[in-house]
Length: 198
Image (tube, rainbow, N blue to C red; front, side, top):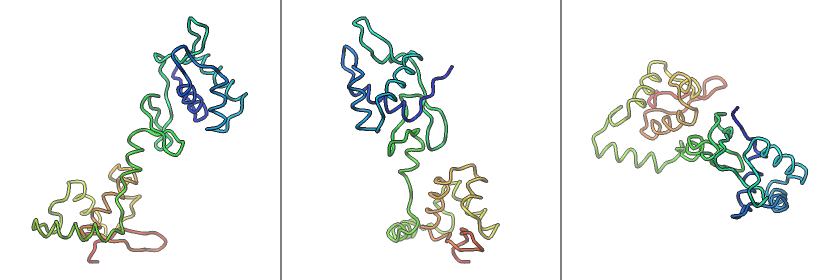
């Protein structure tokens, strides 16, 4: 059976890792940390430590002290994409566990309304003699061609069609906007990306 920990359980486990010394840890130190850091009550910490002991993640060593058993695998559910990831591979963002991909995606946002990016992209393209789709990746060319054929599309539609996350789609569209190939236009109640010269 796969052991998947929730946010409170992860918090208690992190508190244990902080207070554990060579000979193990004392529950009172974990309670102090969990109360200060996560607002967890004493009874909740006892309950979670008991749960972790039941599943073998915490055991009693020869000296009679509790300690983490590093050989026991556990998983964490990414709050971004919902995938279960190994407990040693998650990143915490604003107290929420995330996989590395979701973390990076959240920190690699390309701004749309960035006059400096537009200017630098225009200069770069001019210096290299790029026109139209010259210098774009294959994905960017495909997205641009699709929008040209359709006359416009929402980021959600592009995301679904090209099997990208919404943030990946927004990054690609931002680059096309910086190249002055696409722009925003409100059509009805929704915002569409349309060809720049339309």
